[in-house]
Length: 443
Image (tube, rainbow, N blue to C red; front, top):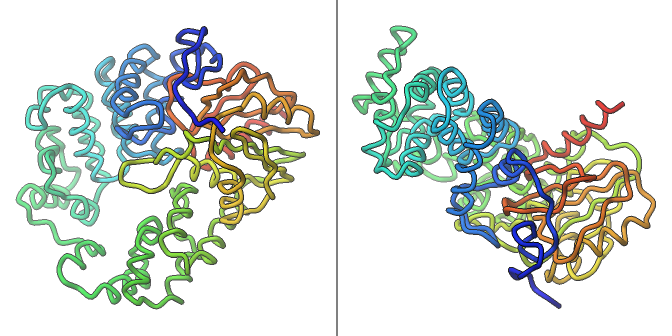
C-alpha cells in the first residue's frame, strides 16, 4: 500500500502534488479553490497555511474586484467560513476601493468579533503590528467597518469585547463610526469606557464562578445557547451532570443549526458518545431537509492518507470527517463508494452510520482517483459526485455521466476536477444545494 507523498512529474507546474496531470484553470477558479475550503493559516497535508494565504492575496489582485467582493460574501454567508472572508476583504482593499470595498466589509462582517479580527488580519498581511494598522486602513475599509458597527447591540459587543491585540474600542476609534441614535451613541461611549453590561453567556457565567450545570440548563431553557455552542459543550454538560432530557431535546430541536457545518455533528458525537443517537437524529434531519436529487447518484469519497490531515491545529477532526459528513447529507437514490488504493462500495447509510461506514471502508493509503472513476464509468448512473482533496496519483479520465461533480474539500494549488467536470469547492451543505439548483435551472 502506498501512502500519499509529494511526487515529481513530467507535467511541470500543472500537476497534482501526487503527480497526476492537473487542469489549467483561470485565476478566478484558482482563487475559489484556495478560499472555499480554507481555515485560515492552518496547515494542510501538502501546503502550509502561509503559502495558501500568500496565494489568496496574490490571486485576489488578478481577479476582477467585483468577483473578489462577491466571493468574500459568498464564503461568509453561504459557506459559513469566518476568517478567510476577512483575508479576502483585506486583499480586495489592497487593490480596489470605493463603494465596492465598503459594501464588502459591511457584508462580510456578521459577528461583532469580526470587526477587530479584520483589522488584525489586515495588519498581519500588510506586515505591521496591530498598533500600526491605522495608516493601512483605507477610507473605504473605515466606512465599511463603521456601517458594520451599526449591526450590533450591547449584548453582541459585550460578548466579543475581548482584550486582544486589536480591541473593539480600537476599531471604533479607527473607523470614526457615527451613531445613528442617542441610544447608539451612549452604547459606544460605554464600549470606549469599558463599561458594557456583562453579557449572559456561559463563558461569563462560568468565569464568574456560577455552577456549570445550572448555567447550561438555564441558558438552554431560555434559548440563549447557540446551536454550535451546544454541540461544542456536550462533553462539559455530560461531565457536569446536566439534565440529559433537556440536552437531548435541544439537540433534536436544531434551533439555529442552519450555520452549522455537517462535520460539527461528527465532532459532537465523538466528544459525547452517549448523545450520539440524538446527534444522529439531528444530522439525519439535516439530510431530510436537503433537496432530493433525481435519478441514480453515485457518491465517491476520497479516504486516502492525505485526507487524514487535521482541519486545524486545535482540532482532532480531519478532512476525511468533513468529506464523509458531506457525503452523508446527499439525499436521493444513492450508491456510495470510497477510494484510496482501491475502489470499495460502502452501504449507503445516512447520518453518523454513513460517516463511520465511509471512514472505516478501507485503509487510508494512496490516491488512485483515476482508477476509481474509470471503474465507476462502467456502472449505470445518472450523476457522479466525487468528494476529495483532488490530489490524484494517476490520470483522471472524463466522467461518463453528463452530470458529474468534483467537490474539492481542500485548498491545494492544482486539481483535476475541471473540463467535463462541474467543479465545486467547499465542505458546506451549500454545495449539495448548488447541485440541485443548477440542475433545476438546466430544466
